[in-house]
Length: 463
Image (cartoon, rainbow, N blue to C red; front, side, top):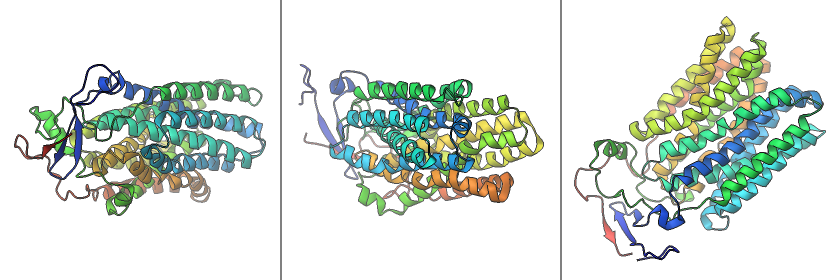
């Protein structure tokens, strides 16, 4: 028996499956933190919504910043690449500190809130692009990385039995958060008044992240909801199929053990390719649409629709992956992402506004979906105990994806025009689908699911 700070004792037991993995069962979410675990979905979503605005706000204010400061277009694109670099760079060290107990979730969120505020102040006041890169790219990127890594891994710990949909919903806030600020900054951020708008946006985001972080709470390691037996085949055939499509990791891998498995580096490279395409689309859709002769309102509408579909699509794809399997879903998403790049190019060449809008939404849908898929897949393959660190390793591909998608994308567009750039992006997307065929959970050569016996997977341990 154990007590969680309330008067009612909670029966606690630990069970071990046939692979030696330990599950902690008996405690409810109410026992642990005094509220339902649904809070650990909506609070992280709100925080991720806030940090997502940094990317959207910067892109929306891009032309204004170029007018207010002597920055060229290439400088602005590289600025976004630096932001993505630091956003990915902080994921692994933050995960290690979180799992060691030296960086609680609340502290990580508070630091992320302050860094986000600093990030908004730099592009407002920095006179030189080098200073802006350091300020916006580093501080805002670090803040976004701390908040994103904390939120996405926290929700996975609270929903170990069906993490795909919840992880996708939380991650979707990253894209949805940009929508109101894109509209706000497009309408009100002029060279004379952009400072006030950026400062106001930064303050709102800082407060939202800090308040959400104050209420975040991690479950005990190995926690499993008491109403779901981790060793018993579910009676519901739908739940049984879900467990079979995405079986839990055979054991809890440390980051060092995960790094020695080839599958982690296949995941790393696949995320590098798909995330690079997504960043390329974020950075170049607006200038591409304008160069193709589309009206400014059409381009702004396409950008807003792309962000909305990107955000909502992450939750939908996560929900689908719970039912059909992460790997199969990822293969389809990569095919769609690659094909959408060819569609965008064709829409610009033909001047078709409806086709441009559709392809923009499809590209946003697929580009955003890869992130929650890899977040959930990391826990499926390597376990939840070290998921923050292991996902940090996979997500570190963003160190290059931002520079490739934004900075290198600018070089490719300058050398090959949009035709060559979109053909290259589409080809990489299709190649990523082939790469995803080789993803297999380590230690599980045949992920066939659960054998149909009442308790074939393990035994109860002494608690």
